[in-house]
Image 1 (tube, rainbow, N blue to C red):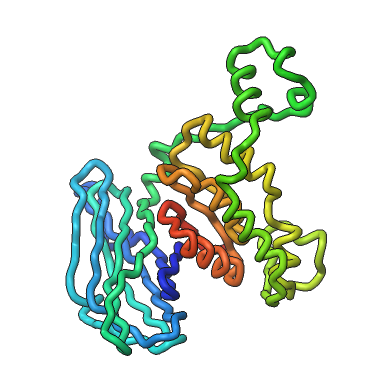
Image 2: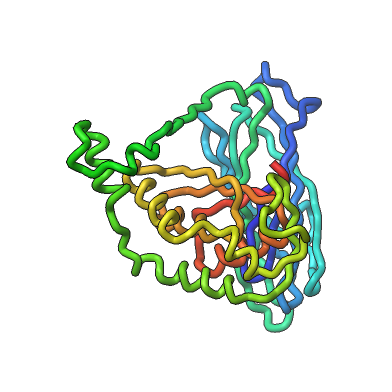
Length: 293
């Protein structure tokens, strides 16, 4: 499941491979995707058009656009939602889709675009191919952190130490993100927090304020800046984050627009906070995948 919010309109996508309608030997793979559109804005809206880009690995990218969705142009009052299911056929069994809806505000006829989050379609048999995992082991062992640059003889470690570990980030680059952190740490709004992984050591109840969660769960600024320096040093282009929290670390990692960040989160209240933050900072290079992983 992936989700994205644009101007108060939340779009959620869930995909499923359909083996009964697929024929891998004939290069035919069928997927369905369920889309939920939730109007969290203050205005009544109507979906007018859809626009898709369909990427089929090793084949030509397809562009599809037209009126409405599955023959409908749904109208949504504030707080209402609309669900529909559609499908996509691929030749490779590995692909992705991304797109947008053209919406109209009924109150004044103004039109605006709502982004559909990018989602991946992978046939099960394809999961065993083409997966490369790069593992960084013990680069930051305690022994390394205790030495200085004069103790390092390897050119790589010397360069890494000088430019990543010992280097100082230009904190002015992250002023707006740290202002967001401060606002979250002062926010007394109550939210429900379900611990899908290890339970919290700080709280017994699932009801907490945003400030309580922010002060105990968000990665400290020095570590956020360290990770950002590491991404630049390794020239990373794609990053996977397990545990979005409220999106602070995601925003740091997405500072460079060429870096594509995919972040996973399971708590609905936290997901909405993170998506709102991503929209506020106009981050198009962050994809949030929602669900219990």
